[in-house]
Image 1 (tube, rainbow, N blue to C red):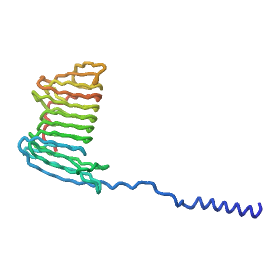
Image 2 (cartoon, rainbow, N blue to C red; image 1 turned 90 degrees about the horizontal axis):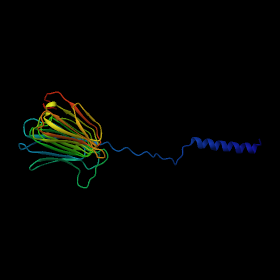
Image 3 (cartoon, rainbow, N blue to C red; image 1 turned 30 degrees about the horizontal axis):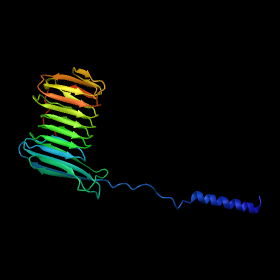
Image 4 (cartoon, rainbow, N blue to C red; image 1 turned 90 degrees about the vertical axis):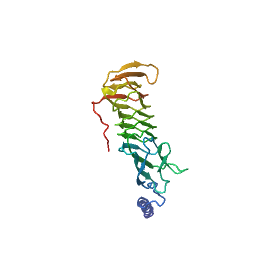
Length: 272
């Protein structure tokens, strides 16, 4: 190899080594900065109520949980809000006229931010009926000594220890509940669009129950089933628990229905 060719070869080798070891000045970090963590804000409020005043709760931004609140006509609520820094805050608004209303809202013109939510826990005194609505949030009711109505677009609903009539429905969520005892002359409803329904029942419930779904029935009771080909739901069933003194309707278009036998005991004691 001539000296000239050797020098050319060495120059090329040095240039390649420099490219391999020198970082590119044009490279950039494409990772997005992490969003600031939402701040938790807690609040507790207690308000007196007129005897027997109905309670309405509207929370499109989170869960609603209900517990037994004693024998004095009042309501206590505890809220836990997650509001991202610099975002318009969710808050609870209480209003009272012929009923007591709790509504979770954003300021006018504001929109919900990622990770933003507000969950409510209510302590409801006896003899105050309850009407609850959520969007995607859970509704969980234990120990309510009055009537219950609950609606959710896609949230799950659970209830136990409710001494009054129950009327609950969710479009896309599941329902799990337990009927506590006879309520002669009432008509109660449990409805889910596509979610499963699981109910605990006693033999002495004293009710005629009609059930309907296109999914399987799983029951601890004898059920008279009628097929409805080409319809949705495609089958219905009827069972009688004790005396036919009240009516309970259980309906899900495509969700499985499970009816479980429960022991004869009262489970409506106050729960924390």
